[in-house]
Length: 84
Image 1 (spheres, rainbow, N blue to C red):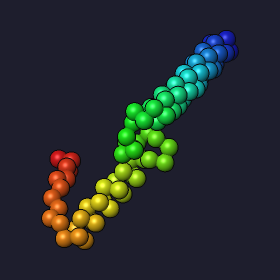
Image 2 (image 1 turned 90 degrees about the vertical axis):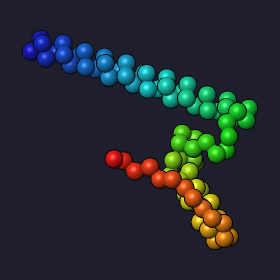
Image 3 (image 1 turned 180 degrees about the vertical axis):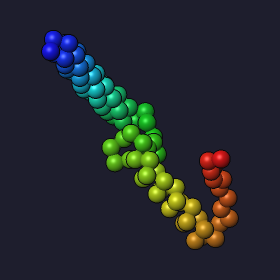
């Protein structure tokens, strides 16, 4: 019973430390992103970690640009990487 209790205490301490690290990372990340956006050091085209700008929104914008170019009669050439 003592061994189980010791393991439980260690697991709970590890969980607490992990939670503290995640909260710290969240705070630092938000402050860095806020600083970059406030000082216009990051382009609007940057996607993936900004609020409202996911990798999926970036893909949609790219696809929209390609389709508009085709609709306007432009020749569009783009390479697609496929996993081997």
